[in-house]
Amino acid sequence: MVPEGQEAPKRADVVGWCNLIANTIAPGDRNSYVRGHLKAISKSARGLANWLTHQGGARRPDAEIVLNATQNVIARNCRDASRKCSTGTVP
Image 1 (cartoon, rainbow, N blue to C red):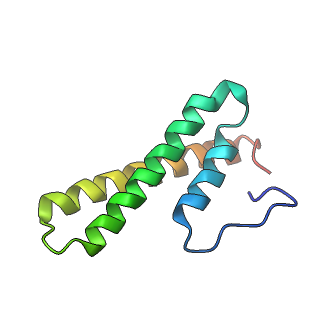
Image 2 (cartoon, one colour):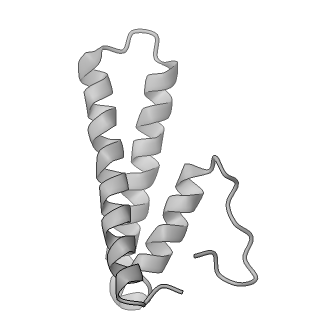
Image 3 (cartoon, rainbow, N blue to C red):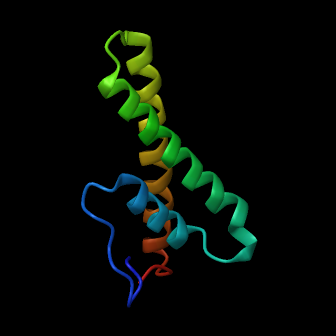
């Protein structure tokens, strides 16, 4: 999935990996808005998770919001990547 000549993101770089997935599953000018959306929700979910991790007074509803955001990113990226891989459009 990492393009030839490009260095892979660090293992813990969630946003970097999600950006790479977005670039792979939504390539080209035609998909710029979709790609931008995928990147934005990934970055937002990561920010929420980071906030929750360091928030002293977080409550269950806060955790549920972060969980839902994280599940959305994973489901979206995995479903689309799986579809691309099964059709042979991802190397």
